[in-house]
Length: 102
Image (tube, rainbow, N blue to C red; front, side, top):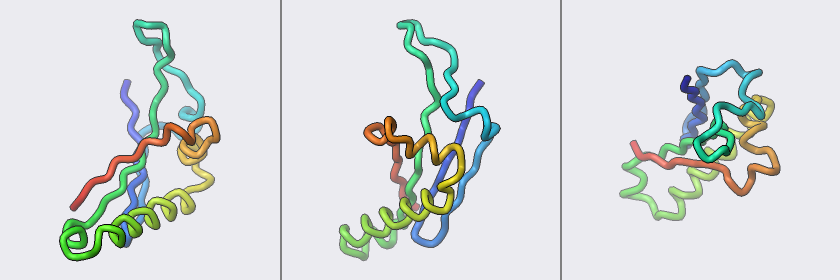
């Protein structure tokens, strides 16, 4: 059984999609691994950067736009169970982000 949840952010838009019922994700453990550790779903935030800006803007400006978009996505969905899990204080040191370019 596979679960996917994605929060994507770009300078011009913010969107989320999910294929998991919202009430079943927060704190839910799944099958244990061979080493006995619990297998827990990981929430990943995808930050999408425009390739044309990477080639024409200063790198710092592009990074700043990505940071603004990331924070905006979290703020827009601050009450969503997935966002609450992602921003849960014990998870702050292990937040997962993937940066892509289009």
